[in-house]
Image (tube, rainbow, N blue to C red):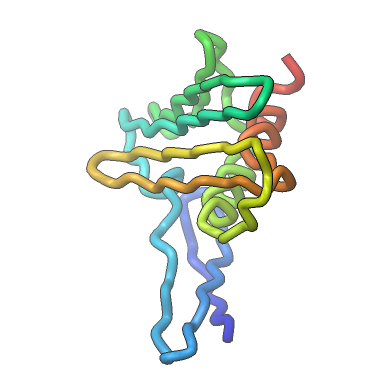
Length: 141
């Protein structure tokens, strides 16, 4: 069973969907890291990808300074739009979903903020959440 909750953040409303297990326990997700950031704080998103014919790693730095949110990748800094901030929330929520691991390519994601680490391995060859997030934040560079 799904439970819905609206949360008011400094950037507007955010819908939180939590899942109730068969035992009746609700596993409510924590507030997304983008919404936990205080001024002059940051968090990282690390993406490691490997398969038969490739191996790569990327690191994104998400920062908040004077209520302006930015993302940095390979020394390229962009100011985050409302759409980009919303996509970060979606990415984090989707990251924890279990996917089939029947592919020879594997993506490992680590999102780190203070002492919190959200880690997930995706071997589905269908989600490509990191690539989608990078396209939204930085375009097709």
